[in-house]
Image 1 (cartoon, rainbow, N blue to C red):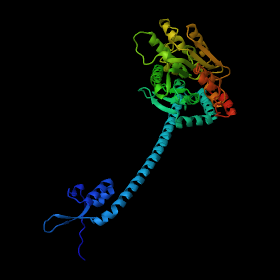
Image 2: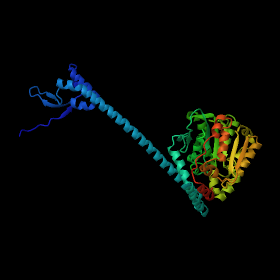
Image 3: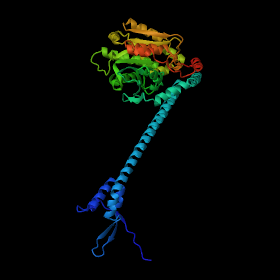
Image 4: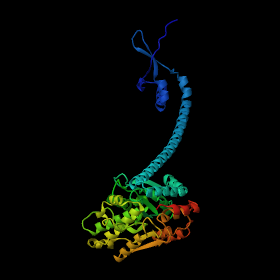
Length: 465
């Protein structure tokens, strides 16, 4: 049997077609450039050596028969166009599916990261508060309380992670916790009033997501809410928290117009420890502006009003109360940078300093909400602060809600649905003077119930707050 020689397949660039190539060759070259799969057939050759000249003889895989080319060129072009169009459609469909899958994957990943952070913050709180009998019972009460409100937490959590109206994790500074979440109304017809909200958390477990229920419900009334995150203890102490909050407020004042907010209708609000931090940031800013030559990135004049919800404003009166409640004196003084700093970070005492008396005249109206059955921070804290401000000529008032606890105003009542006195008071103040907004509020549908009534009543009884 004669021996067989395996000849190599080699690739030659399009230059094998000379300038004198026939029109059919040039036509094939154009097809090859349009479709790379054709190039393999056109430019792959068997090479044999010419015995006489010692040069390779090139034999194309496709015979250059003009009759074949003429009869198939039009059909090939149409086939290639259909193939490219099909491939393009398939690619777009694949990209769209991949985009949806990637987006869902990012949402799930973010939800897992947020859950991990919440768990870590809870464990951190336990570590700093100790594991004595008092805190074991409180932890068990917290577990029961959370379980009873779980139907509401699940619905709020789903909205927080998956709603297109929530912009999470907007960076406002260069510190690790310098992030904020924006809750945007669906209605985008014109600039909206804005609340810069500082969440609570005993100065240890504060987190921006704690404001998601308030953000969701206020955005349904055409109000933008910016929930500001900040460093907690031990990552930072009170001066770091106030600095972060002030930086977040500055971001809202200077950039909220980019998100549809009205820079002339910005309100500042805080809840619990966040009410204390927000008040400190506001008064500290007023003190800076009352001085001379100190540059600032935002102004107290940009804040239409301050809302404090269940806050404490005189730390000298609260340090022993917190110790009896389980936030031990040593830990609390560590958060507040020592006993000598309690007066410096007590808004009620700060504003009475005779050296800065002019600062009080710069403050916006201050409205303080509090429940009379609040055992975490007694309602006298808001009442006394409002009276102090009034004596200094500040437009201030406290609004007390009979029988409401520390969490009733912020969690149980909003989850109950229907009419909520504190919520309606807040919205009425923000929409004051806006007849169109007030008309919409009058016909707004009642808020949806998130938790059955019997579970809310049980949660009220077992709440450790």
